[in-house]
Length: 552
Image 1 (cartoon, rainbow, N blue to C red):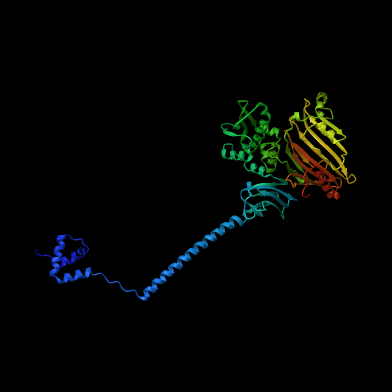
Image 2 (cartoon, rainbow, N blue to C red; image 1 turned 180 degrees about the vertical axis):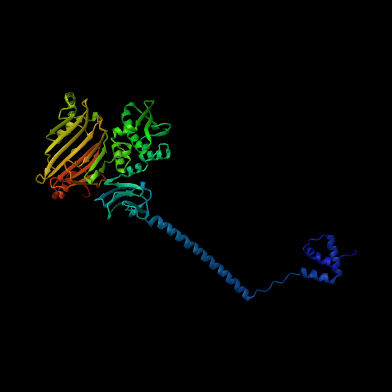
């Protein structure tokens, strides 16, 4: 076969030939040309000969070894850096979680009581409801624009949880204090300690009933779901007065109606005070199988609770007084009177069923009815009153006949024992007070122990609302109020009154509620016998089998 391929063509085809990419016909033509052409044969030979691998020099080996060692060191350094960063971050997290004293922002986790003495010395006592936290410090800060307002922050961490769940701290400010907050929650205002629950409800006051989110915050703060099962709501906002209907899943009997609707009334009044443009609250519930509506209007509430809604929400002190009247607060409320000259005690007591008053006091019914029948406006006495003296406490208790009324067991024989009561026109007993008096220290210290209870016939709203001291009796008295807790956790409210005049004695008053009864102990004494009076108060606590106060 004639070979017409030139050297240039063959040399162009050689790379493909070497890689076995040419066809058999082309291969035959190339091989024929190579046999006849020495230049192309040399080029093919060079292309088919492998390139020699250069020998490794000592320098190259050293360089490779260095790079390998460097890579190992870098890996170790990276791992060490990662470990250090991990440990550092873990330490920071552990410090912040367990050691760092961070302010506890959730006030609901703090059970506290704040008092202020002489409007300057602030004292806070309390405990944390979260047992995994411990108190690490207490901070006090003042608003620069309002230095009379002090904010307390409780700092916590987890490392302090063991044995540091309770706290007590005090600080004396250089200026007069008017308000104290724990975080953003009012805790003391113008001489009155504001209970945490009262502060939580007070914080939910809002202008419009149409704001359902705000409405639900009020109900949550009230804890109404712990009493009633709420199914739904309905608002009436097309015309004034606006109304709010709360539908309940609860079913009650006719026998329960009075108690249930009294509870509804109390909740309704607070809801009306918390919602500025609300005119009425209706509870819709099932009574003996029938749907029943109980409606309570703002006008009804303002008449019965002796104050307008605007007045009760004007300050946390007055708002707390309303809560005490409704019984939503279980503790008595003591609010400072104007002029720092006394305190008002506001407390709701559960009404005692008439049937549980089994003593001979019930025999006074006809006498009471005759009092009302014979009474004239010109009389100097008021009808419906009962007053009797007794030679022994046993006889007085039998006269009343209420099983929960406990003996005073005074540390010495009483000089006088009396029972005073009021009744309505039908002769039903409304209010009973048992009091016992004695004197000691050569007649210079006078002690009165009293117990007050209200029956279901009471027309006073079943709450006490009294001022102490009386301005007429002690016009120049200065009173301070403090909470004292016994070793068993019982709390007494102590009011110490110091007279600014030599014509009047000083006094200590202690109050506590127990089993629907308000117990009080009053001790009057000359200022020189204050320590003896305090010792006498302790005797009364011990004799009544209540744990002795830690201090006075």
